[in-house]
Length: 148
Image 1 (cartoon, helix red, strand yellow):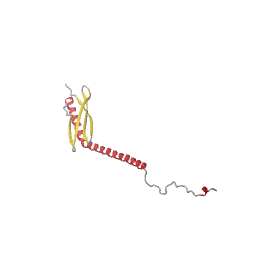
Image 2: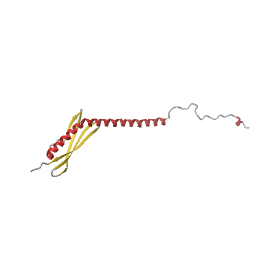
Image 3: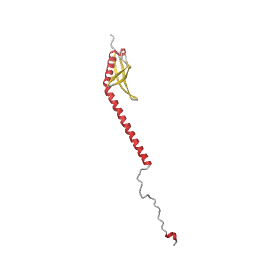
Image 4: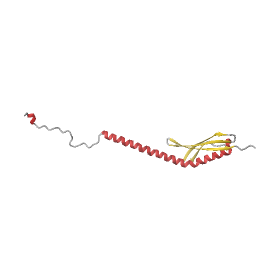
């Protein structure tokens, strides 16, 4: 037997006796990325819902005025036809907001005795960096009087 066979050589320990309980940089970066994507999704959802709420609030605030303007235009076209004098733009203040509005009407179908008009009303409200557009459409029928 050789001397080298009798000498005890302990194997080196490859494992650390105290395991490291800290996070690695990769784990921290992946966690930060997942959390930031989640935060962006929550942020987008919140502001999308907030914009929808403001749109509904504006619509409910100005809808009665829009109905009244459409009815007024429809009555003028029914009574006066092509000779009607109708304001086509302006502004209106409702609920501490100023809306700019535009109205257009055109004969879309006509015969010897009848004219059909399409009425379009659009309102614009400037809000922050964007604008809100609310619109309505209606039809009016004008019947020519008999000339006998």
